[in-house]
Length: 446
Ligand SMILES: Nc1ncnc2c1ncn2[C@@H]1O[C@H](COP(=O)(O)OP(=O)(O)OP(=O)(O)O)[C@@H](O)[C@H]1O
Image (cartoon, rainbow, N blue to C red; front, side, top):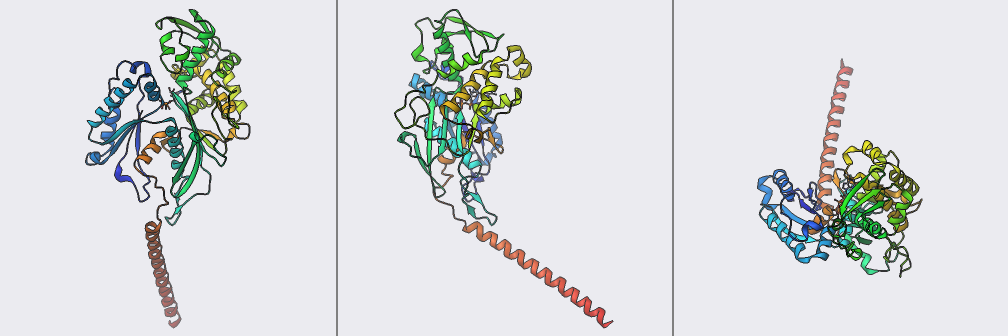
């Protein structure tokens, strides 16, 4: 979940926010929500207290505050509507108790999440509009950037396309600063990092007939863990595969670090065969050919950053990602721990997630040797994190106008500055010339 806050008075004449800040509050997970709403405020309080400190006291009442929830809450809403309503109302009550202008809590749809991420990235990179040197507004001729978000529960792909979008559910027409953008977007629920890992465990448990000890080809050798069936089957993403066994049954899972077996099982998470359109990504979802540059953030960034920074392997081509995933899978638990002790909690899963990212981008989204290098794995643009939150806030506060903002006011101001400067320069030059002439004529008369 994100809370967005910013000093409302910091907007300039375009409605462009010059300063803002946000807070990402991680929920405790679906299982903990399903019976009772969370103890609201456990992680919200530090975030709100930071807001109280950042925004000057006299500006508190005029500072809009929104709460948006994403795929984790979409899943909870599927499993238990009452629980998801209870979470939202508990959190809303807590936000109302603060002195800000609280304007509501909402669960975003997958499409909204995708489009707002795309808006954020292109807004931050000034791809919609920018200032010329006279202060006029220029619409840059460069193409917009596609956005790929890999969250905990869902993954989104969003990009501008000229191709026809065969499924209207994937088409969004946006008019921003007087320009119309035809955007393709799709959000895959249950394809976020955490849900992918649960689905993978579920497939492995099923394949091993739920024996007391099973092997995991994506976990490193030397690593093993006992887990309860409920930690795998507490989600709607694994619901269909739930066994008849008691969910408090414990299973021991032993890592075998086998990259090719791992890829085999991870590929079973996708359906690459069904398609009723001229072309599909996977699971029967229409997708036009990817075009232009892309920015891949959240867990896309974490995964590729791990490969590059910890494993020391640059990722330019799909084959680099494939090879790196295999290397991660073949690295033992003790070696991994030695390389990145601070990431201990995440280390067992980099093999599965790298393999998943490789399959998703190449077999799923169809990036190839030509288009894959156009993906920038990045989590920030300048100082700001890329994600749906900024785009959501810009939309709710009408900060991105549909029409191009007028340049007159700022241009007029700049013309005045230039005129005054010219006047000063001309006067100074005339003065200097006059003094020089005077001296020259004096020296002639002597
Ligand atoms: N350093 C890291 N290495 C690997 N994974 C990470 C790292 N930090 C966070 N993650 C994981 O990345 C995933 C995406 O995190 P993010 O905070 O973007 O998700 P989210 O907004 O909660 O997802 P959703 O929108 O699907 O609800 C999560 O599974 C999170 O646990």
